[in-house]
Length: 285
Image 1 (cartoon, one colour):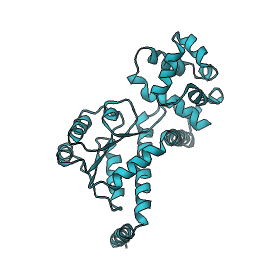
Image 2 (tube, rainbow, N blue to C red):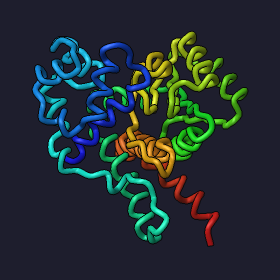
Image 3 (cartoon, helix red, strand yellow):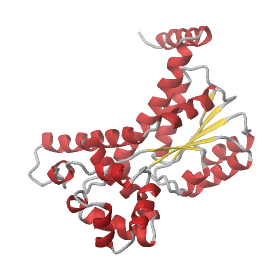
Image 4 (spheres, rainbow, N blue to C red):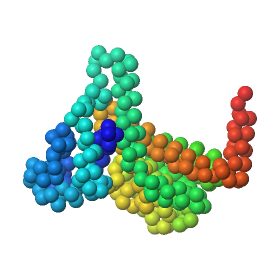
């Protein structure tokens, strides 16, 4: 239940900057009064925010929940929760306490992100990746870490991956791609100008795109075929994107494992793994 409770709040935070009008009023009320909101019916919430129940129902669906009932279950036990793990680091905090807070933030990001991964999205992504002529990774800044990690991992599979950190080379890479290729684009905000430029080029070439981002309503997410959302609670002592990075790396690792595990059962996949391991073994004493 702890996982769901944090996921419910996190989905509101992830979508907040893209909300307008009544949706933003509902979100602001819930974020300011999570304990009270957790005990409200849809009628209670509508009355407190001064909107209709239909507006609340539409809001819930827009941020990724199937019904208000499912959404309200996401607040189960929230009144009993505290923000102790996510509070500011105090001056007299022992190193072990600081580390505990950092690890709790990472744990929360992973739990909340896992709760949002949909089996159908994973199945569709794996199908695209396995059938891709080439699999290209795109990302800048902190996101380039996730893109490089994906490239490094998929080199161990029968998939043909490619990645380069330079923005101009990434753009040229995008220009050469076709509908037979697949792109995985990583962006915490989903609003980076260079990332969107590349996404537009890929879309013009009809390249299937998979996004890994913290904001499912971002411009990048709207351009992509499949979106995997990384979730992280905002904390005062470090950037939200740091926990999001951990979640994004784990999404990438999950995609690799799903593809790699299937490929390892084939003769070509098994042979490739042996060759890679043998080659790497020669670099070690």
